[in-house]
Each structure stands twice: as C-alpha cells, then as structure tokens.
Image 1 (cartoon, rainbow, N blue to C red):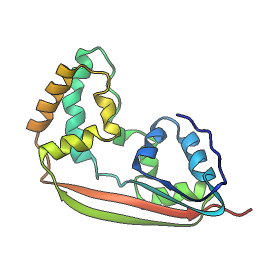
Image 2: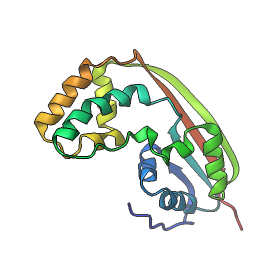
Image 3: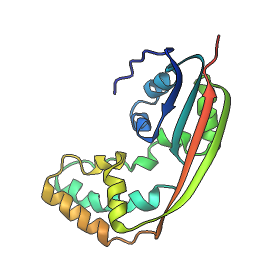
Length: 174
C-alpha cells in the first residue's frame, strides 16, 4: 500500500469501506493517510462494518474457498473480519476511539442499518466484489467455479443485515 499523502490540501476526506482494506496490513500507514488528508479544520468521514454484519455472508465464502486454497498449496488467509486491525474499528466505541486517537476533534459515530434480501447469487457478488476476493485471487477458473458452486449451495441468511458505522471528525487546526 502506498501511504504517501499530500495531506492538508482538502476541505474534506471520505474514507469508504474499501480503503479500510489496507488497515488489514498497515494500520498505522492507513491511519496516517486518513488523518492527513483534510486541511487543518477540515472534516473527515470514515465508514466501516460493525462486528457481525458481514460474517454470515462472507463466512460461507471463506469456507468454500478453503479446500481450494489447501489444494493449491497456499496458506488460507485469516478471515478478513477476524484480523486484529479491522477489529479495532468494528463498534461505535472503537471507531470513535480510533478517530480520537489519530487526532480528530468533535468525533461523532452513527450506525446505519438495513436488511437487504439476500440470494446466493447476490451473496457471491458481494463477496467477489469486496476485499473478500483475496480468498480466490490467483486461483484458476476451475477452482473458482468449484468455490462458486459450494458457496451457492451453502446455507445463507435470507437477508444481509447491513450494519455500517459512519464516523466523522475534524482535523485539529493547531
């Protein structure tokens, strides 16, 4: 990950779910970038998943991928939601503390929730269109097809219970 920043030039910084992916590997670098993006007095906003939100959808994907990872002689990456760094921002209190810890003032965290009807096909699209894709990257087309078949046959919830955290703060002026 490139953690170089041109910090301080923006009125606002918005960090979405996918930017958190580097937090899995370089939390200090990602935090530095997020904190340095807005100008002094500028606003920052970050979004992340609340604990328990993605596990019912991504867990079966990880299980379906595990056999193919082992057959390919690759170490299975730890499930994304269990990585220590992503767990550091998976509740309102943790996200608030993290934002305060990188120097944000006036921190506020709200939770957005929605229940989206889930079909196996939609679940597959969610998994392969997110950071969970790392679980199939580099596997051949036949292996991915087997993973897809396993995933589509796995028991999934009827709804994706989205619980997103939205944290905001202001970069200090001093």
